[in-house]
Length: 284
Image 1 (cartoon, rainbow, N blue to C red):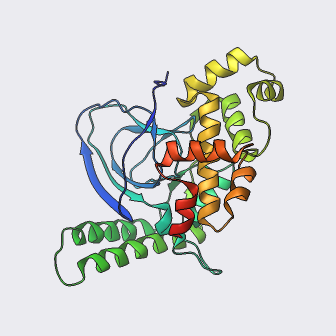
Image 2 (tube, one colour):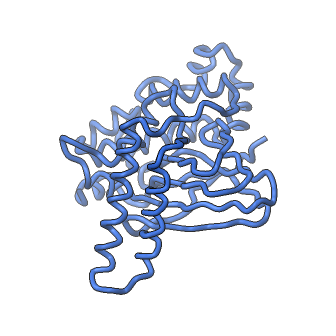
């Protein structure tokens, strides 16, 4: 059973941040989410990864892509060293690299928009050593104080994302098919994410999936760490923020993401992100 206490963790006050971490103990990680993107390059360990109600068995060289707002946690299965390189990436940075011809969000977009795909990429191609070498160069550059060090680090970071998307688009990567889940809850999650601007009351969902209200609320929180109401509200807020960042007017982003009242939307948005939708719009 997953602990049902969840929270937003990690803060990102810069375009991106890199961590190279190794755990030597069987730590217990709670379910949590971030308001930025997360890329994890898995190096070693005996680890399962729980993401949005599904648990994936990781292998060395897997790449885990976690979008903003997705509930996740690693499940450590033994004392084998759990080593990984983690990149936190601000949504603003990714949206600043969008044109008619390309978007550095592509690998995230494709995995989040296709309900048959999962957020863990696996490959045996030569692209993996190249990506990890880029990670090492990027890590070294972040402690460098030579001329234009910050610009050089950003260039390496953008190169890494370009290489990741190129490998992804040429089918060097495949999404792993293994994973355990409660099939009914997985169906509910997919339905919610595909119908954010529809009626998603507990009564509606229980009728849609032929589950009693009480059992649906119980099993949903057990499997995801969220109550249904909090999950839907968070998903609608992240959806609205994403639409605003991509140029949609504030009120349209509000209502197309499923909010019935603009005032409710702005209050919830401020509680989630610490600023207002209007301030986000001004920053663009």
